[in-house]
Length: 260
Image (cartoon, rainbow, N blue to C red; front, side, top):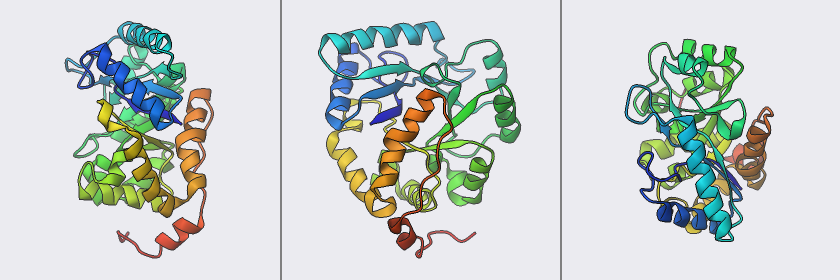
């Protein structure tokens, strides 16, 4: 599997504090079945969390070498989790933002309460510069949970959506779990990621538990697409594919959590 959203680099944000803890996270990733992870520290314009590209790349190179020295088969690529902010177009012009794995795809974080005013113009400006957008955990945005038609609007705007494994396990509360299920049964997910900050956030047991829930909702073919095929397309600079209709999804859609 490929994880396009995790906080594995040490001493950059609210992830691990030491390289030893980062190495522990790497071991857990390998045990859970991952072969590539994107290190995506927080990039929040106007705050202390604005790491430079050089600093991120240096930490990725250092951790990648440590992982290799330990005999672990895990590739680490660079990236950022960029908070959706009007400053993004200017930061792109200044060369201060890092796409996923040296592609033209940016991991953009949706705010937890609501999308910022003028978000449509920000998205358009980013896309006009030739970048695609993978939106991190939109299911955790309260506004999108209460107004799910906006999720469909995001997709219609050309945005790809990444949902966290933990959302299906109730890690962020019932409302988020409900939105994640809605997105799954409506085919509104392009990638699944751990968003892990510590070694216990992506254990094999947690991944297996979430997979079991998802298999009943969307089928194994879609799980493969969201964990391997589409993440690989991101790193190859190719357009992502929508989820495929399945018997599992057809059965679940008879029961609606929302009315539009």
